[in-house]
Length: 83
Image (tube, rainbow, N blue to C red; front, side, top):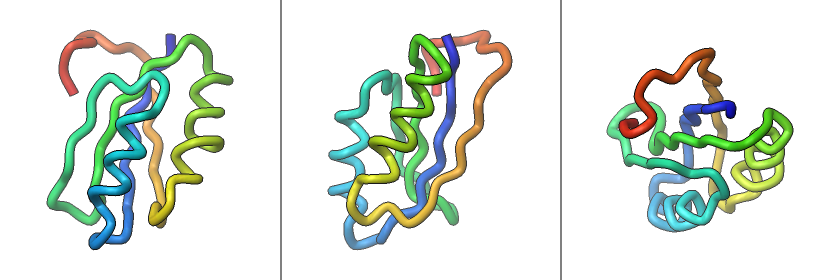
């Protein structure tokens, strides 16, 4: 099961709306607001790489006010309970 960490940069005034959209994502394990150049960090775990790609391309990029994303896919996840 691929796990990915996604950094999201969004319109600051709409961070709450983006978080609401993020919290509806399939495979979302955890999310956090950040005080960095990126506004939101999410952890996703899905059954296949194709499902992960669909979530990123078909859902995250379509959330209103998302400006950019960076996706980090893990090779091996040793602790599935923490962000």
